[in-house]
Structures are given as structure tokens and as C-alpha cells.
Length: 131
Length: 131
DNA sequence: TTAATTAGTATACAATTGTATATTAATTTT
DNA sequence: AAAATTAATATACAATTGTATACTAATTAA
Image 1 (cartoon, each protein chain N blue to C red):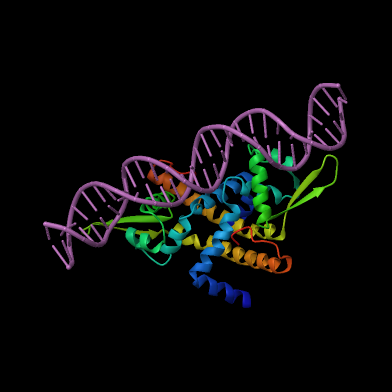
Image 2 (tube, each protein chain N blue to C red):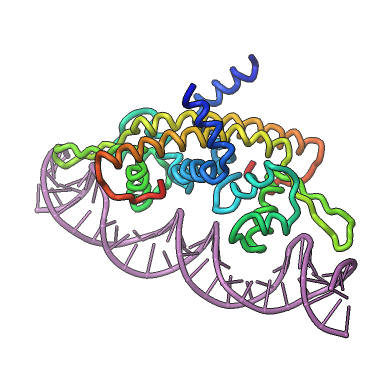
């Protein structure tokens, strides 16, 4: 009840609206953040596991993106005192709740791709985007 | 019914899942696309109107981003044979339906910002992101 | 006739993002 | 003792994205 009112109130105030949406956008923008988040949805992973699973990512990029995601509270980094040291990465609660955003993006993407391909059939125009 | 099954099916297939989500991400990534889409939610706008409304955008960037959004089917460009020529930009149906994605991003952003600030109060750690 | 408005384009540059390749240092397996 | 595994970091570069500033060509208002 209280939450819904707050949500509606902020929607009408474009400055806060834009800020909150941009925060969400920054969490996932770039080439590697979504693959990393996606991979961690299936459970904890170590650095080398992520490096192997995410095709063509370099350790430099993986390291950088993991730091970004940790700073933004999306993942948690745990050092295990094994020999050699292993480091575990896992989604936080905020990271898991990100699923709702991905779901709506998936739904929109599917609908949009579909209508794009339908247009292609009738228009015989060229494919200029990655849709 | 049929749609829901299709949605669930694709969620379990990570390749299509990632593709559709990336399509959605590409529609809004960068500094200017969200401000442009946001501005057009309130109705049709001409080039110069957008330039005035969107603080600090250059005509070069506005022109480029409008082209991208048009190619991706988010906006429609209409040339009016006035003197001098005016050009109208408006959201397509796909553009309007993007609201659902923005809503879920807004909701997540608000929740996430809130928990971030609550952590700040108890942790007295420094602010390292734009949250 | 000069200035302003329309919708952009041209050129050069700066900043950010991503790639390629090699290296580190501790430990374990062969 | 040599090779492999751990989780990264270092350096140099390429590509993409964004900024700054000036310009165009048609028309209209002052």
C-alpha cells in the first residue's frame, strides 16, 4: 500500500525516475555484466570457473566487472583459505531480485524481435541491427 | 496461454534468453537514449524541441541516437512539408511498450537505492558509486 | 538586409570500454 | 625439480562512445 503510493509518486517526478532507472541501467551495461550475472544465477562460482564458462572473456575484464558488481552490491566475494586460495562469487539478495528486471527485458525483447522478423518478411528490407 | 509457455521455454534456453535480453539492453544503453525515450513519452517532439529539453545534448548526438532508435523501431520520424521543414519524432507501439521495462527498472532501482542508503547509515562506509 | 529559426552535418579531439599478451606468487601434482 | 593450478595484475593498444565547435541551406521575421 505505502510502497505502491511511493512508486506512483516517484514516477510522476521525472528527476528521481531517471536516477533510479539509470542506476539499474548501470548495473548491467557493457558487454560482460549480464553474462556474469546470468552465470551466477545457477549458483556460486570461482574466478576460474567463470573465466571458463564465459566464452572469450579475459581475466582483466572479469576481474574489473566482478569489482564493479561487488561495489554495486550485486555480488558477494568470499575468500576461502584453501591452498591455493580460492575465491567464491555469488549473487546477493539484490542480485537475485534483479531477475524481475531481466524477465521484463526478456519479455519485451521476445515480442520486439518477433515483430521485427514479421516486418522483414513483408518488407524485404535489409537487416541493419542485431535483432 | 501459448505465449506463457513460450516465455517459460525460452527462459530455460540460455542462448535465446541472453539474445533477447541483450536486444533490450542495446535499445537503451548509452548516455542519451533513455532521456530521449523519456521525453517522447509525453508526446511528439521536433528535433529542436528535443535539443532544448534534453540538457547538454549536442545536435550530433541527438541526430545519431534518433537514427539508432528509428532503426530499432522505437521511434518514428515524420517530415512535415512546412517552411522551413519540420521533423516530428514520436514513439512507436514498441517504444510505448518499453514502459513496462522502465517500470521494472524503476522499481528495482528504488528498492536497491533504499537498501544501499540503509547500509550507509549503519556501516559509515564511503560512497563509491552513483547510488 | 540582417538576424533568427529549421534540421541537421563536418571535423577534430577526449574519454571510456574492451582486447591481447605476458607476468606474478603461492601451492600442488607429476 | 618441472609443470600446472589458483586469482588475479601490468602494459600496450584498438574500438567505441561522447564532446566541442563551427558550418550548411532554406525560409521567415524584424
